[in-house]
Length: 154
Image 1: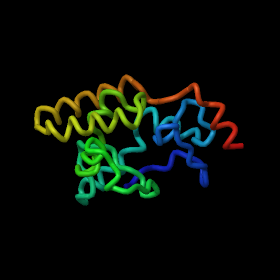
Image 2: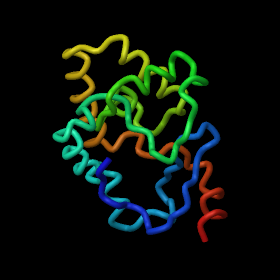
Image 3: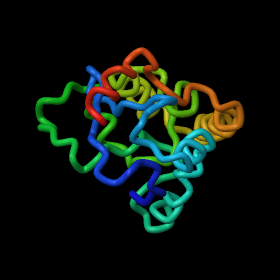
């Protein structure tokens, strides 16, 4: 997946308790320009190349990182639906909740999307995504865990 770099080189991979990627307004791993790109979602623009290549869709669950190893057979039915869809630049959970919900909640919403794919739902997701980016809603997921990042990244 193509993306503009928003973090410092060799920044540690910090995860929340649910396995989702940590992010916060004062994350010391993020560059000054990276903060602006993340708040405005400009770091996502290169992903349109992935859509043109056929690697991604405009609407779908967010792709997982290659470093996220898992055993597909150990996933529950809801989680499997996430991996059965082509990843998207935006999706149901990103449009409505962005980074403010847990990974399990994202899986639930991805399963809902998988069961209800339609042009109407895709249009609603796209319009809600634009509104969320403009309003800068739910950009960060856990301001309460800032101490963890400061301990790891010095």
